[in-house]
Length: 333
Image 1 (cartoon, rainbow, N blue to C red):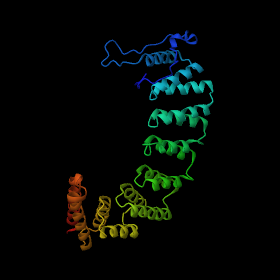
Image 2: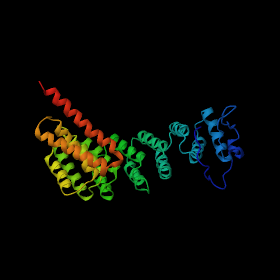
Image 3: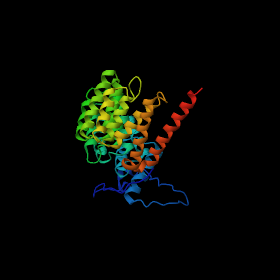
Image 4: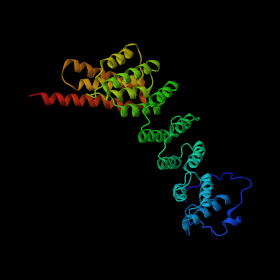
């Protein structure tokens, strides 16, 4: 039946199924671990009884209100049990149950298990059955607002699914902007912004807007990896896909460097920028100067600003030297 969680309190007046008259027709089905289990799990009596009856119900294929109630108790004990969630969906379909009640139930379960994949998957299936995403943006926003859940992968994945499936893009940029204002290092929010803008289209106007937006954010926090990654991502959406496609970005980044900023993300951006330019026409004097800038920046990264990845930066410099050397040799008669 899957892994068990710690036994949870089902209520001090909880009555074992074996003592319930309305369950007298069901013979519990114990878990079969084989004759010589490698690891024998010590289940609580309550957990064992609930899942013994759950196995029996599944074995006989019963889809009833009492079976639905049984899944509720089983999932309270182990909310990650895929088999029980799947059987619960089968029961809901069979009973033609009120799915709004199911969404209300899931609000509570997600509130307690916001990082449980099975819960979110069940929610998605129910929303698809209803063809109604009315509460999904609010649900995911609440999940993300809970302490420690601002970057909850499952909540973000569900939000993107709902937006994409039901075309809920209209107010998402405003929502994401608010999250970035609250925490400019929220990489999940930056990722969501890219997701939305990509759908709306990286038109020249959108690219200009996003570059300006990102540079303004970097001006506030210059050592922000999320913003620098986003800047590169937007530049890759230009027609050329080159980092020097917008002179204002080059001027901005070089201005930060000349002003004494040594953020490793700024230096990494400049290294990639100068590499691209140097490889355009190897051998030209200007490009040799660009290559020298790459070597100097790589040395600074490996010895001062990103020492933990010093081998990588040494590799970048050596790789550029090799590429330039091969290109020069290929051009010689």
